[in-house]
Length: 92
Picture 1 (cartoon, one colour):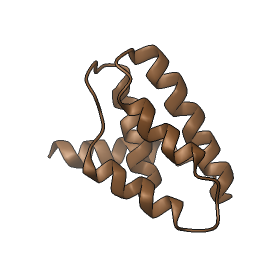
Picture 2 (tube, one colour; picture 1 turned 60 degrees about the vertical axis):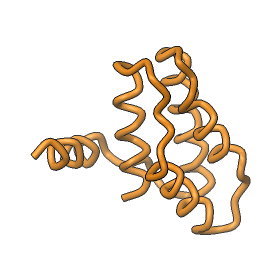
Picture 3 (cartoon, helix red, strand yellow; picture 1 turned 90 degrees about the horizontal axis):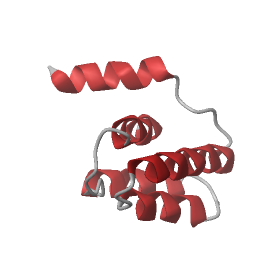
């Protein structure tokens, strides 16, 4: 579920020009970082790039970070359909 939250943020970041850092995202990153022994840089970079106000640069860097996080955790990225279901559930 935490990876789905990160994917949701990635999908939103192209249309928003504000800082996307929030406590809920920080908790998701911290949770994922403690799942197994991993390098911290992709989690730290994801957090840092959330504050980037250039949506294109932010989107590219967050995408890179999610790929690195999934490699660290030895898991696949969530399917887009799972992310969309989560977004639709939030709209209700």
